[in-house]
Structure formats: structure tokens, C-alpha cells
Length: 475
Image (tube, rainbow, N blue to C red):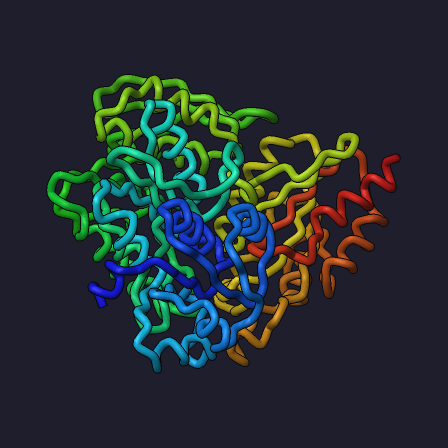
């Protein structure tokens, strides 16, 4: 297989429109390979990225696609099942194949010093802050981020020099490699932001997730560095398996890097960072919330450990506007704001809403939630979601899309969440789809409203449709 890969010219990606797979496709194209692929569907921002790169995307999976593409190598995304017709064809042929993380390790990380950002929450934003900090230090890192930084047209680049920033996902690699993606990423430096139960479709328990993170920590070389959030006992437990230097950060009094005096304004968040030597640093950033201040602090801790100049690191953090689909303002009509956010885990929903409520403290905050991920479709977090919306003034909950993707008897109930929120004294509304949500919102628009749409998918293009309705009402 290795000999075949060395002679590779044409590469075909199955599941090419996924965030990570599209980024990999772009990286391979930049490196000079002939790239094509297939997917069941494609939506923004990755559809625009692939189209702009001139990468051919075939809709639907058929063995004929592989025959016509005649690839030297097929990269199989983790959305692909063993009974997929293209996967079956590849397995029955002598075409070389590998998983997405295996390909990242082989083609892009083997000769670099990967800086891997891992954790249940904050990976994409922290990776983007790290990229911005390195660039402010006149570095030209390669990068692969599970989103598109607002200052860039794409979430990937081959870069130049020793560093490669990569978001380290704990989700599994493929149907033929049931291990976490980040185990293929050859970390030299790493950040672990947080660690709690998630991905109920592939992990049975928190202990399984901790075991995967512990194995990841053990991969760091002796000369490397692991930055760990001391506010999480689970993170520190996993970090204990590292043989390299461990640098801690957080609000804990014994952390090497300590967060203090966080202030969230309508345009900026400021915080005080205290380093291992007791020196203090004042940091101003565009991203809202205490959780983003912690993300920024972790980047300071890692960059300081790598010997980079902190003044420039802080400059990079300060000028980073964030990532598409992470508290991204999609439009402002009059004084009404529409925001898009990826949050779906109960803690992420709560932290996002808390940050936005502090930023827009005198306004009505309206949350619109679509439980669309493989985990949020399940009942595992049914009760936890009830307190996640405490900072919202009104909540619309969409019916679970494709509920059959969760096992019978283990399915999330949007109607139950709406009823439980009402019992908690919240104004909540169950809706069948985006059209019903927009109709209900149009009856209750108020000056100064802030609408935050929480979903990991296109959500029936609700963002622009909602803005159109608001424009019609306000004009």
C-alpha cells in the first residue's frame, strides 16, 4: 500500500463536503494532486470553497463514480458506512484507501511540528486564535481548522515553516478505524480545553472518552508541550499520561496561567492574564464571553512555551474576529441582530447564550435551536438542555430532523424540552420546521431583538429567510 501511495496522482474523497474532508481536499489540491470526490449533499461554506478551488463534486454515491475517476487513492470519510456502494467497490478492488486523519498525518504532518487543539468544546475557535497569534509572530503555519476563519476565505492552508495548526477531533476516524482522529496527528504541542461526555453515537461512557484523550496525551514527545485546562479534573487526568512538559491554565489558583477580571462589552471582551512568573497582561479580544477568554489564555500559554513573543501573541489574539458559524453576526436590520452559532452540546449552548446575554445585556435574546447532531438527536442530554437556555428570554425549538437516525427508545423530544422550559418559567415554543419558526417570530418581532440560531447544519437557510422577514417588517 505504501508503494501505491508514493505513486499517487489522482485522489478521490468520499464524503468530500464535510468540513474536514473539504479542507483536506483543498490542501491536497494546493499540493498539486488531482482531486475529486462525492457526497450526498453539500452546503455552505464548504460548497463555495470546493467550487472556488475547481474541485469536482459528484452528488450521490455510485460505484460508477470511482470507475470514472480512476483514482490512485481513495480517502474515506467517517460519514461513510461499510455498505456504501462506493466503499464496497473500493474494498473489493485493489485501489489504495485510507481514512481522513490517516491522510492528514501522511501527507501534511509527518515533516512538520503539529500543534493540535483538542477538547470537547472550543477547538475551532481556539485553533483560529492560535493561527492568528502565530501569524502575528511572523510565522507562516500550515493549518486545518474545522471552520472558516472570518479573515480568510478557507479553513486550510499548506503554509511554510515548522508549525502546522490542526483541530484535534476525538470523533472516530472511519468504519474501518474505530479510533479518534487526533491519534493520527503526531502532536508536538497540544492544548486540551475541556473534556466531558459527548458523541453518544460512538462512545458509551465518559471513561471511554478519557481513555482516548489519555492516549492522545501520551503521543506527545519528550521535548513537546501539553497545555491543559486545570479547571477540568478530567483534562488533568488525561494530561497525566503525557511524558512531556505540562503547562496548566484556567481560573484555578494553582494554574501556571490564570484568568482574571473578565469583562464582556458589546464590542469587546477584556481579561487579565497572569503568567507563571507572576507578570500580568491585559488582553482585549473581539470574541464574547468568559469561555473565549479561556481559549485566548490557552493560546498565550502554548505560544509562550514555544518561545514566541507574547506582545505579538496578544496582538494576534486581539485582532482575531473569530470563525464563521461561531457567534457570527449574519445581519443587522435596524437594531435587530441575527447571529449564527454552531453550539449543540448543552454546555456549549449555555456558554454561548451567557456570553451573548452579557454582550447584549439590555436586549431581548431569542434562541432558535435545532437538535441535529448524532448526539443531540438522542435522549442522553434531554434533561441537561433545560438549564442550558437560562440566559435566553425566548426559545424556539425545532422538531428533531431525521429522528430515525437515533435508535428507537433513545430519541430526543423537542416537545418535552419546550414543556420543561415552560415549567422553568421560560417562554418556549415548539415548531415543526424553519418555516413555522419564521412565521412565529414574525408575529413577535421587537426593536433591539438579538436572534441566535443554534445548529450544526444549514437549518433550511433560516438565517437569510429570517433576515428577509425582518427587513420586510422594519422597512
